[in-house]
Image (cartoon, rainbow, N blue to C red; front, side):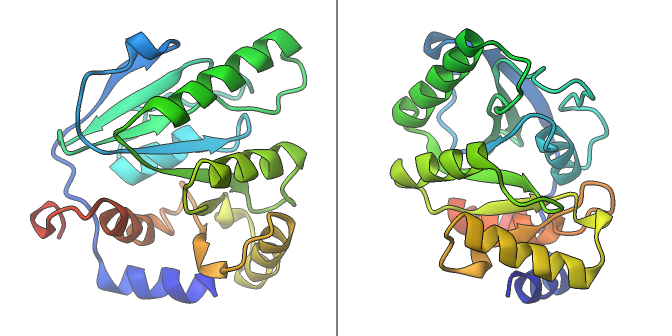
Length: 216
């Protein structure tokens, strides 16, 4: 199961040496995308699922990616440069009921243009809240990601809120709801305890085929 993978990766102790991490740009239009050529990893998820917290945890920064208790605040595509080697891309959160349909459609178009036009994009990873069964919007986003040709990796965030046995049960629910065939595509993660950080860096190294000099 995914937990076995996570523990094994943690034992390897492999993670990126962060020498530089910065917000490159917040973009609402394609012409605002940075002109960098490094590979990109994009993160999708509903509003307030913890994408910003995850990025901060992965980069060992407290507030590089701004977090907010107000859902629906991220209305742009945010590009983060790591070591001039890759970019993390935070996509606008979806599923916030108080946002107008016009705004939702705008965000959907923004994400669609990025997914279909950005040649540097290597993977799109979905974040869900491990405590809850994925909702309709999560299922739609996951199907969208898969339809674009991406693998379908899922980060099950806020894992520190559950016991290990509860995490295993909830990962099974996520697997069933999103119709995921391989449980090893699901990664329990906690931005609070940093559980899963090493596991995710091992995955990113595999996806991007980065040189070993970037890791220790």
